[in-house]
Image 1 (cartoon, helix red, strand yellow):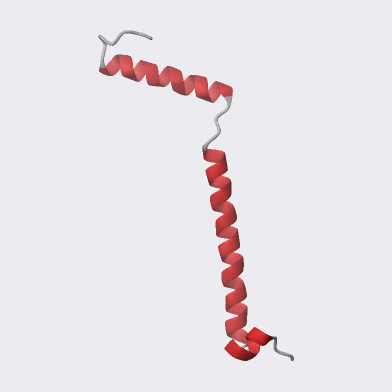
Image 2: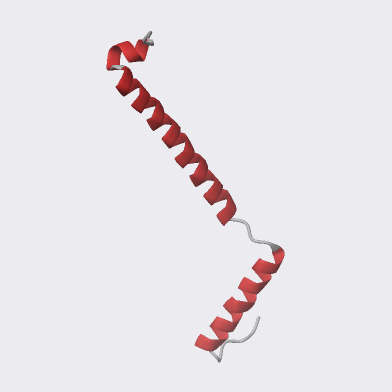
Length: 68
């Protein structure tokens, strides 16, 4: 069994754990990027529903507020 450069310095188990750490960091980063990109976008119908709900809540909380 041959060791790579890192394997010779750290030992084979440590080299494997290091690779697993890098893979885990990559997967976590990909999940975060996906979540950030998905969270910022609403479909037109979702945006309209959100706006209607917001206006209804504002009318509930302040009935004297003029509609815009």
